[in-house]
Length: 275
Image 1 (tube, rainbow, N blue to C red):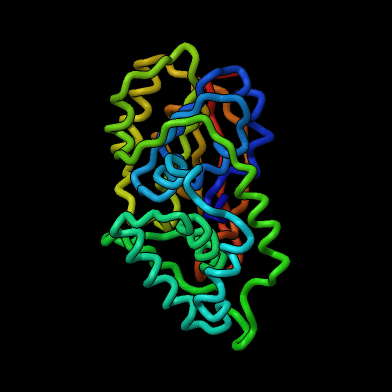
Image 2 (cartoon, one colour):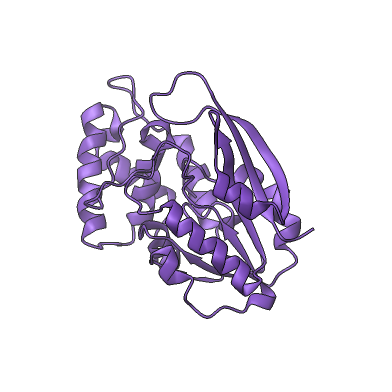
């Protein structure tokens, strides 16, 4: 649905067979919901401390994602043919977002805003304002082509989800009652060894340790994404947690992020109690 730094869509094929073992999929830190939107026939329970995606998914059927809506939004902002158009649009969007004005065109507006932001960094400041910069445009040239809108409209209209979505701190969310036997938890937190692209979040290593205890105390079925190492620094707490479970290495390089030159040496993996 959104192009979001850190989304796990590219790893869906590596975990799909594990998700298919369970009726209920629970994602306590759902981010862009990239994995959840690919699931079919599952009961989904999602949560995020940032209200945007849970709110959109709870209201999904109320949004107008027609081609005409895409065109109208772009026309209202000069087809985003100047840098200032983006920042005017961002100010307009933030006012709607912070006042909970999730009207029928809000999903299209959000989709377009995130398409234009730099380096796919979906970032909110401590005032809950979206503050990512502009990807850029040749002055006088529309950012979007008219033939883009058909693809965007079709993609959004095909998203179908059977779920409930919450806006809570992850520790509060994990205090809910769950059907552990029939559920699998997808845990994809902001990586504590990363450079803080999600600075508005309050995720810390202390919270991560609470999640380890939650898994162990409830014998929960889980998939846990994380860095084990980054630029020579080991995530020792996660390594110790993972030693009794199955680990799959996903990546040894990372080149995403704002103002980063070259690549960073990382060991990204997922850990699970399943075979």
